[in-house]
Image 1 (cartoon, rainbow, N blue to C red):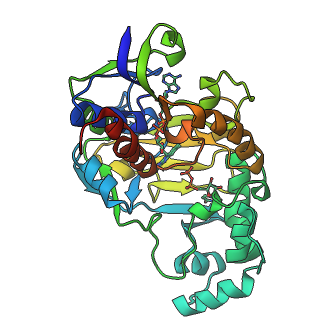
Image 2: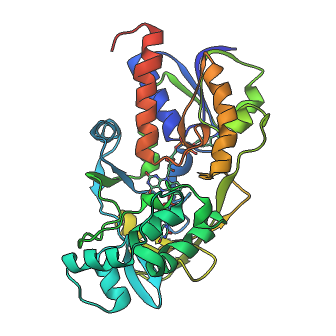
Image 3: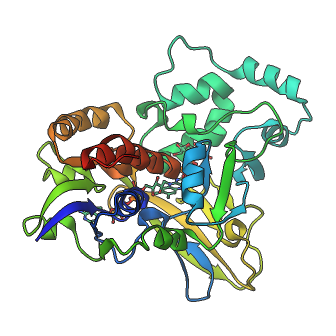
Amino acid sequence: MHYHYVIAGAGLSGLTIAERIASELNEKVLVVEKRSHIGGNVYDSYNEEGILIHNYGPHIFHTNDEGVYRYLSRFTKWNDFWHRVLSYVDGNLVPMPVSVETINRLYNLSLSCGEIEAFLSSRAIPMDEVKTSRDVALSKVGTDLYEKLFMNYTRKQWGVDPSELDTSVISRIPVRTNRDTRYFADRYQGMPKYGYTRMCENMIANPNIKLMLNTDFEEIRDEITYDYLIYTGPTDAYYHYKYGKMAYRSLNFVFETYDMESYQEAPVVNYPNDYDFTRITEFKKLTWQDHKKTTILKEYPCAEGEPYYPFPTKEYQEQFLKYREEMEKETNVYFLGRLAQYRYFNMDAVVRQALDLFEQKIRPANGKEG
Ligand code: FAD
Ligand code: UDP
């Protein structure tokens, strides 16, 4: 069977590119997905109690990219949502990221914003070069806050010391000297009003899109031909691991439902120094669903299992360069998304990548003007 466009993977990156090709070029697209559902890791569903859960961990949409926000807004309305996270440290629940409130609560102080700046600069460790995630934290907050908030959480999440992770990991978390206790500071933040899955279904409602679930691309690879393949799975698998297996961090998701209205004070509570899980999410506090019961999720990081996080170490980035050389030689295969690019992308970044790929490569090759 011959297809003009084949897309491997129905996550946000695959669905965005499928939608663009189907609706802008009016071309037929085959989307092949190995799981039994679309959406990749943003998939959400109602559990047996009727509570909307995020099956692959808490997903909060946030971006400064107006184009991405406008694009996704074609497929969903949004509930305004400003994400907040508390961290359980020394018996206290303190706001993450670090802000005035965090320091005041941790050290039982009542410092002003200006005084917090002085507090942090007296503790921050000056460095000529910030090379690792450990350096990022130490150079911003000093040893004690690093040990209380970052060190053990990161060891648990990644299974290695922050000194082995590149700067991108802990740099995701800002350090603030004001009273802003939101987790993200981006201009646009929200939750899809009817959930991510509904948003994703709307993205591929176009009849030009043919969806094949429960099918690994490998199963049909030799049975189909195509003019263009957009591949969003792990790149090492695409090349049959010729340069070795890439490492991914995985998670074991444990859901629990309680016969109570509310379980915890915030949508997410981090446990840097206690327990084997990193954080607890209470879904009703993300979605504002009314329900007598509540469902929570504990995330236990592990080495084996579904690939969720590419490993941000120098060693694996170097290994990936070998695959990148192969990827660059391809003429009709594009690699898109978190797994294929082996990068710790958020949702907005994968949508941006797909929109750019469409405008810069796929539309021009198709000969149709934008
Ligand atoms: P994926 O969602 O991984 O989709 C890839 C799809 O390809 C999957 O469905 C997979 O089954 C399929 N596939 C793989 N190989 C094959 C194959 N051989 N054949 C067929 N199909 C295949 N981002 C945010 O912006 N905000 C958040 O709050 C946030 N929280 C997160 C929390 C967790 C626990 C995780 C893991 C990620 C989080 N993210 C968040 C990141 C977000 O999930 C990703 O940016 C986004 O889902 C990436 O989309 P993708 O299409 O690149 O990859
Ligand atoms: N992190 C930490 N302490 C926290 C929260 C995060 O040390 O309380 C570190 C940890 O290494 C984590 C990274 O910051 O992997 C990024 O955190 P984020 O909340 O963005 O993780 P994600 O939601 O992507 O799992």
